[in-house]
Length: 64
Image 1 (cartoon, rainbow, N blue to C red):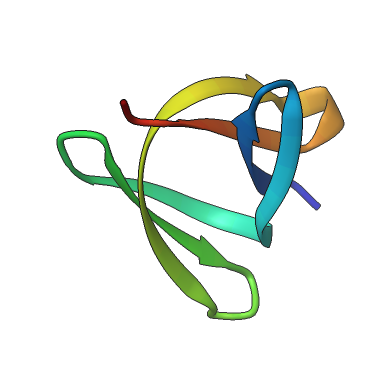
Image 2 (cartoon, one colour):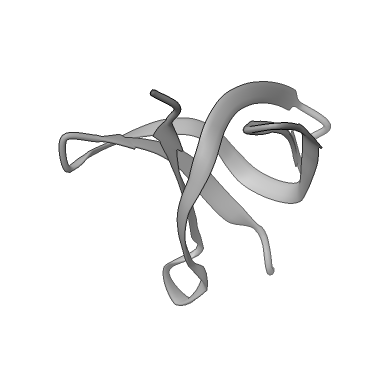
């Protein structure tokens, strides 16, 4: 499987946003649509902080 879990990073703490993300689509300035393999969707306002694909993680940071 190639999906990854999405997290919001704040003060070195990772909070899960969505599991098993299959699609990450930019929706505008600092806005992303995430779609899981189960069809669950979330839109978030954040910036992409880091992708750790060997750990299956997508890390986002809040927009100031």
